[in-house]
Length: 122
Image 1 (cartoon, rainbow, N blue to C red):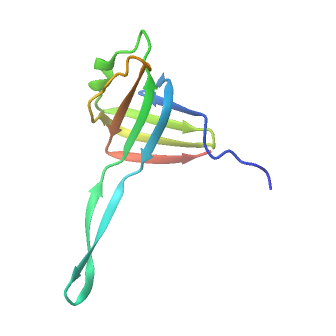
Image 2 (cartoon, helix red, strand yellow; image 1 turned 60 degrees about the vertical axis):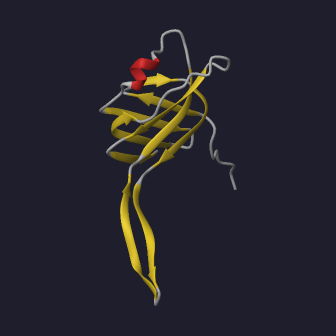
């Protein structure tokens, strides 16, 4: 059986602008979360709630990158392209959390949520 990449090289874009990944990134495709409901007589079913899709990444700072601009991102398309041939796109995305720059490492973490996430193969 041929060896196949499982992870590693990846590319991170916000509205078509490539940012330099500094470390980890996470993709949460969102969807419905179901919680079991039980009463004294046993299981009766479940409740549902919507869980928004999210993309989070550790990025490198650089002399032309504005943390203020990233902090203000709304209605964007956020994309992660993986070396295994898959791409995740987050639509109508907005930045969700504070951005803290680690000045020694030159890195920061950024989180986006959006209205819809799409998985593209190949």
